[in-house]
Length: 262
Image (tube, rainbow, N blue to C red; front, top):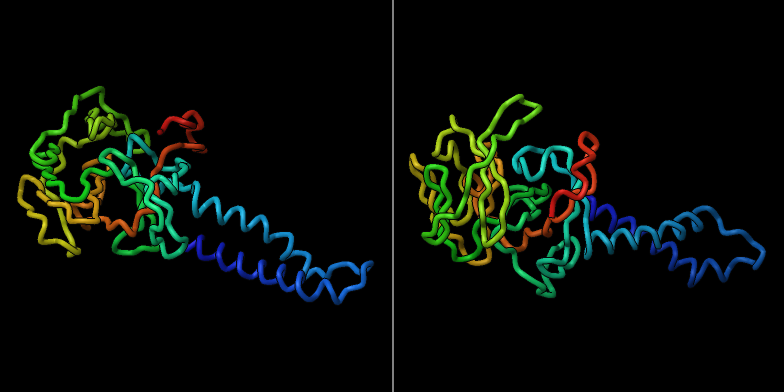
């Protein structure tokens, strides 16, 4: 469901009623006549819908985490806020950037439209920016020939699966984050699909090497062995960017997670 499109349609409809009343219907009514319901309701809803549309389009937008690909940073059921202007002001619906405010950086957690189906929103961590050479070999990450620092900490307990995973603190572009690895998972990418610039990637039994093309980004989940990401379906083009995730505002199952993400 494209909620932005639904909001826009409602905005146009209610705005049309409000405008029609201002320029025509109000002049046909006597001063003591009550507005008909089909004028009163759209006029009442129009400013509310306008505010929501502007907030979601240019400031912040709420999302709910649907999968475990970003565990332990984000877990299923987290409600998060996404900064819509961190990477530039974009025209709603067509997502065309009109004002450049900033660019995604390695380590950012970014929401984007899934390249294979733009009606779906995905969330992953930015690992590679345009021009980077990304090597993920034997579960170790190298960017432009430099191994990315990481240190192992206590194992992570997945309470839903009653399963422990090896947990590491990894540093990308000075940003520390926690990520998981499964000891029994293969180093090789188990399956891949055809995608634009597929020729920029080489796969083998030890992992994958990719050069990020201009205007694109290489994304990975923090739950490394349980994430279908750029290793599988390719690069994210700039026009698919939605915004930068920065805040957990609620989780029904774990209220203590409020405000634990930045």
